[in-house]
Each structure stands twice: as C-alpha cells, then as structure tokens.
Image 1 (tube, one colour):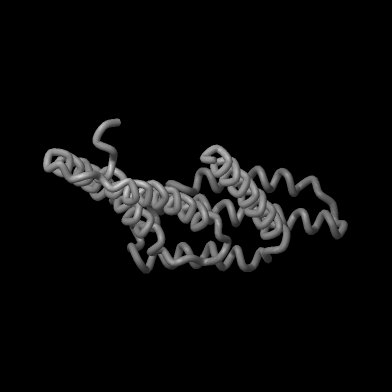
Image 2: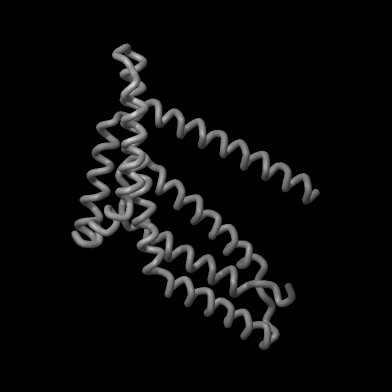
Length: 199
C-alpha cells in the first residue's frame, strides 16, 4: 500500500513538473520584453531603496560578469538572423531571455546576500533544535513524528517557493528573500527538534 502511494506521489510530482515546464515555455514565448525591462529596473530600484546604494552596487558587481557573458552570447546569436517576421520574433525572444536570466541572476545574488546574513540564524535554529531534542530525549518525552514531517515538508515548500520567486518574470517584493531565510530556519528547527530518538 505504501509503495502504491509513493508511486502515485511520484506521478503527481512528474505531472506538476511537466506542467511547470510548459508554463515556463509559454511565458517565455508570450511575455513582452517591455515587462521584463520594467522588472529588471524595478528589482534594482527596490533593492536600492531598501538596502542602500552600496548594497545594490555590490550585488550588481557580483552579477554583472555572468550577465555580460549572456548578453555577448545573445548578441552573437541574434547577429546572424535576418529581417523576416520569425527572425525578428527570435531576436526579441533572445533579448527577452537575456533580460529574464539577468533578473534571475540578480535575485540569486540578492538571496545569497540574505543567506550570508542569515547564517547565524540558521545555525542558532539548528543548535536549538538539537538541544530541544536532547532535552526531550533525557526527559523521556517522545518526539513528534508529525512535527518532524511538517518540518521536512515545510523545508521542501520553502525550496519550491524560493525557485518560484527566482523565476517569476514580474516585479516581486524584496521581502521574499529574507522570508525564505526565516522559514528555512523555522523548518530546520522543527526537523531537528523532532528527530527520532534512535536513528
């Protein structure tokens, strides 16, 4: 019975992954370049307003080498195309791809910054969860397998939400990055604090 449930879960996961891939390709084919330009400018302006000019400059400096390489490759690719309708559309999609990947790269470096700032919180959550587990173990209080499973699922959901936040091609609130770190710390604490007594 458990094997059948696991198989059905894998089927649903595969179906949702294919659906997400089809949605991503459809968004790539249909999204206007102007919207991606607005997203790129809004992300930078939001970080500048929220964290200051120096922080935004640091993230831009880290992300720029990868973005410049992508732009150079796109220029070489689009340079060989002609002036027909489909080729103009391909040039526009190449430009849109560069803008979208630039936004993803920029958000990824912003997330890295927040993860670096959140390392003390993640370590504290891990250590506190471990000691909660040890206290419960020595006090003969049973661990909660439900909370342990919630922590595991929560960690998975936070990971999926992080990928969605990175990939969404519209302006997103910057508060999503620190929230990822906070919820990751909470899920690690739940997972560590409710590990089984004997592994």
